[in-house]
Length: 303
Image 1 (cartoon, rainbow, N blue to C red):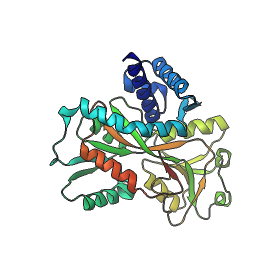
Image 2: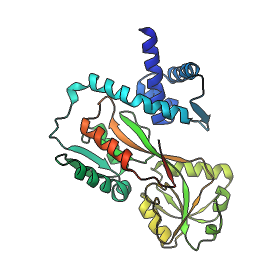
Image 3: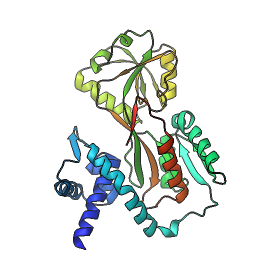
Image 4: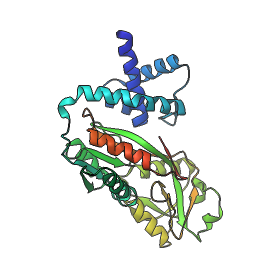
């Protein structure tokens, strides 16, 4: 029995690290020490006989083996959640309260919601569109059942379930000099007009650290809070921007050139759920439907 409990903790640690990207975040989510998380991961790696995570730059990235194992654990932990949280079951006739940021809503989720409702007559959803910080507070306060975000967040009290992964790109007007390059490097942006994101957003801190390490000083011409606003400013010829390509750029945008950016900066598009509260059957159906009906694109991969 004790051995089974140890294995369960190892699996819990694996899932928490995959979801948060750090052992610190995993420890907060599980309510244990960081050393306990690291120990559980090491024990699991020894048990399966292979490395499950790559450690770099203060973060811990799952290998393909870790992601496959995490997928296999999904039904097990869903069953455990059902057993432990039956008292929270949502009646079938209640709508799913879904909250999504503007970019994901207008360029991805609304079409998925429409398809889901057409395929499942009788199911009901309430869709709210708000910024990610409002989304997180709403999930914490149980005003919403499910959220989706690509925001770089670590917050106790919510569970992030990544399902799409993308890498940062550089977007620019089609006639911009950098459009002649096959890949844009941080050094290429020295002195270049750059549209940045507001400081409260996770991407801004990461790109500023990258520029500082490389001794690069772009010329900031504007700051904005949304990907769509940044791309519209690019379209107007104001400068270039560093951006998450999913889902906005998945099918391309007129008058905008996109080039890979030489930096290990990744985005996880995640489902957001309140910690300790198992998702309703309707929430599971919606998550499953979104995963299965998202078309393949050249900028993102399924986690």
